[in-house]
Image (cartoon, rainbow, N blue to C red; front, side, top):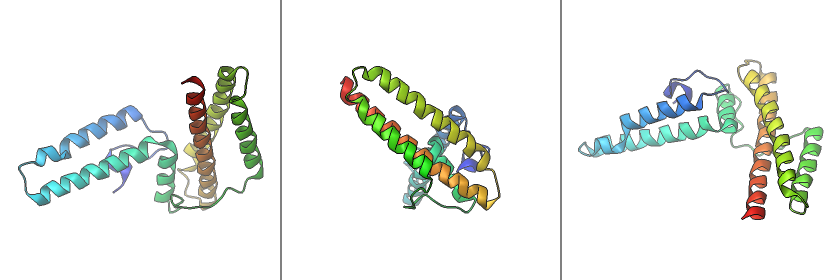
Length: 174
C-alpha cells in the first residue's frame, strides 16, 4: 500500500497535516470495525486490518523523519531498520557540543533562558535539514538520495535532542 495514495495526497516531504488528518478521519469512518459488527468474521477481520494499515500510514506520514524514511524507501533506499552511524565529523562535533549545552542547562542559574536558546538552535537545524530533504527526496539520482539518507540520520539526532530537552524541562519545572 502506498501511503500518499491511500490519503490521496501528493508525494511530498511537506505534508498538509490538516488535510492528512481530515482524510484519515474519512478513511476511518469508511472502514471502522463497528460498521462491520453484523458482517461475517472475514469482513470484520479485513476491517480491523484496514484500520491498522490506515493507522500505520498516518503515523508515518505525520512524523517528518518517518515520512522522509518512507519516501526514501519508495525510491529504493531503505534505511528504516539500519544501524549505520553517521560519518560526518563536523556534524558529530556539533552534536557533542549540543549535548554538553543540554547537560549545562540543568546546572544553569537561568535554565529558562538556556532552554529557549537551545530550542532556537534545534529549530534552526530542523528547518535546515527539512528544507534540504524536501528538495532531495524528489530526486531520482542515487547520490542525492544517499545525501538525503544522511540528512534523515541528522534529523533523527535533532529529534533525540528535542526529546532530551523536553525531559530536562519536565524535571526542572515539575
